Image: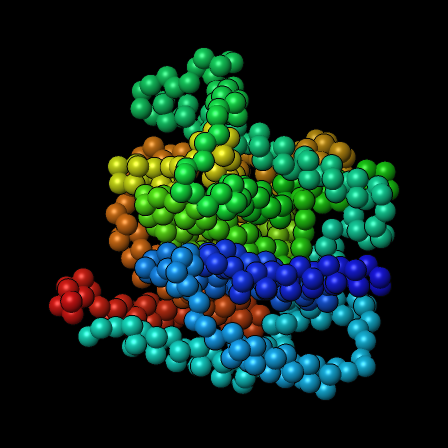
Amino acid sequence: MWEQQVAFWVLAVAMAAAAIGVVRSRNIVHAALFLVVVLAGAAAQYILLAAEFVAWVQVLIYIGAVVVLFLFGIMLTRAPMHDDAGALDNDQRWGGLVVALFVLGVLIALLVNAFGGKKIHFSNALVSLGRTSHVGTDIFRVFVVPFEVVSMLLLAALVGAVVLARKD
Amino acid sequence: MTRLANPFPGGDPLFNHGLDLTVIGFVIVKTLIVFGLLLVSVLLYIWFMRKVIADMQNRIGPDQAGPFGILQTLADGIKLFFKEHSTPARADRPVYLLAPFVSALAAFLAFAIVPFGGIARLGTHTTFLQLADPPVGVLWLLAMSGIGVYGVMLAGWSSGSKYPLLGSVRASAQVLSYEAAMGLSIVGVLVHTGTLSTRGIVLQQTWQNWHSFVSQWLWLPAIGAFVIFLIAATAETNHPPFDFSEAEEELAGGYHIEYGGIRFAIFYLAEFMNMITMSAIAVTLFLGGPSGPKLGFLNQGGWVNVWIVPVFWFLLKLWVVLYATVWLRASLPRLRYDLLMDLGWKVLIEAAFLWAMVTGVIVVGQDQHWNLWIVTPAAAVAALLVYGFLMMCVPGKRELEDIR
């Protein structure tokens, strides 16, 4: 199992460094590219957990669509790209720190509460759990109601965005 | 069509006995072979394209380098390789240098899932003739074309001037829009095959007799998805009549204006690699990939029928599709940009979505032994009604102007 440990820590350090790059970068496109590194690292972590489908959906959706749309937003609007005169700095470092620590605490508490002390044993059964067909069956049989609720939520957000963006 | 069980459910049998040095050696050799195949295909394709278009326009085309000018692309490549590098003064240097490689890498990796032959046995090892057979299969293709967008986008942005930026925003908007239609059209195939793995998809289209051409190969059972896929893939690869990324009259040349020498050549290479990959995926999904009739007078399990014949069928189908792309390039003028977006968002995405639903009805009907002669037209009529309703909801050109 030591290979997985090594890979985990290499990826984790790279992700943390890139995450610092996202907030430290003075060029907004560079920040978006650092974000791509973080998301790709997350996808690699999923692969380490034998969740291949989730990993590639992460690449497809987050890297292939979400960050591309960020870049689109940056390039199509006249947003400042370089931090020439502090234009990218909203001067809320302390607030940001509090929120970051709060989220970290919530995530740690959740993970320890849910999985504390449990270990993942790699087996063929685990690999087949991560297979596309298995994930699909789970989503559309076991978790169909949450899935539909999330779909409605996203649809509502989409309609809301159109309403807000239209001038008339 | 009938469903066949996948004899290798666990992916490439090369890895069934653990990982050792020979297996790693196999993977490296396979990578080199696939890369070489793709590069040689690009060289031949560019020559082929210029020669065929020249023929269609009553010209001679390249005829100086080598017999029939076949080495012309190689000569161009060598010339570009030795040209001087220059970086624009306002360029964002690291990103500017990275962009061409992102394009080329994504284009090459997308080809990894294409099965270009049957099964190869060497010593005790058995392997598929394809670089990788991940269980997520086709999703890999979509993920890689998503990453390929970065090459276009970053190239335009990092050049630090107006025209490349406009060109890249335009090209990447096009690629993104058509990726949605392409993904949805692939769903129409996946409902038939029940697997994402490209090897699994090809195995379901195995050749049994001449009837397989219409019953096993998916181009007829999934004809709607096939048409949508071809249009969307043409737009996705920025191929004429959708080649807006290099609309020279409007944008001086698109996202790579500021690139020269080998860096430009890498973009050019990536573009044609994408072209070949998309054609190969069309062959894989709809035309049976490497499946085809075997040579009856030879031993069915002999090396000619197991190794050579599938590769021959794959390459033949690939070049037929590639010829069709050249034909398109020679005969169709470029579309207008708003028409391109209309086609993508208002026609292809809805059509692909509805086709996937009709396919679902047909597949369920086959499982449940419904009368398909009633169910299929009913599903098609229902789909057309839904489409008509959607089109009534979309405001037309005139109404949009009224709103403005």
